[in-house]
Image (tube, rainbow, N blue to C red; front, side):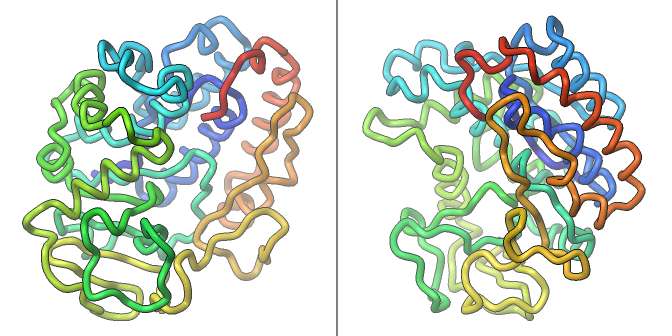
Length: 322
């Protein structure tokens, strides 16, 4: 089984996209595991009830988690930005999805607002049989991004973005010390690696990258295997088909209105985010209908149903974006 791991707090800014992206991933061969911030929003507001009903219809495996509970006693030692913002904790919780999957399953992290469009790029690949298989791996470097292929991806110098970090269940459990069946306990293990001097931003990337590049199996030289495919030890790295490292670190990505053409779909797409109740518009989902025409009828109905619910100002008061 192939899974994609997503997480959201209860803010509409991101939660609104969950039913949409889950249906897209399902059509690409992934079942969604979504960690939801434990919040009364899901049961006590019309917006929350609609979102949870739609993700249930989409076959999403949803797991509730309390960010404050996950921090536990560790919370007292962390900066206010990670203690108070559920968003920071919900980013990290994507790394524990494999606590709920079976041996041999492939689990890949992604963002709720990164809408996957390319059937080819996300199709099942032989590289996924490796312990770790990361798509678009050259997204981030600790220092200045180099346009030259490095000899190796060294721990502490390179990091991977969460779109799209994948591994087999066994590798996730082993390299991160996850507790099978228990998201909260797994989170306690991960957050226990946090040092008071660390920045809470992109903590998930640092935890994952350090774990992957610290594995004995990942040691060695970075090798070019074929167009769009690299390997370092037993870690497989996939770029868009035909892309070379020198083409730059994030080929194929577009935002709405920037480089998008319906006849030339990128591998993924970021719709504009909205920060007020009247910001949602069907037009921002145009590429979804182009890539998955069968979703157009449902998508129109969903947008029309959710848009008036966003006028509930309690959804926005005191919320931090996920």
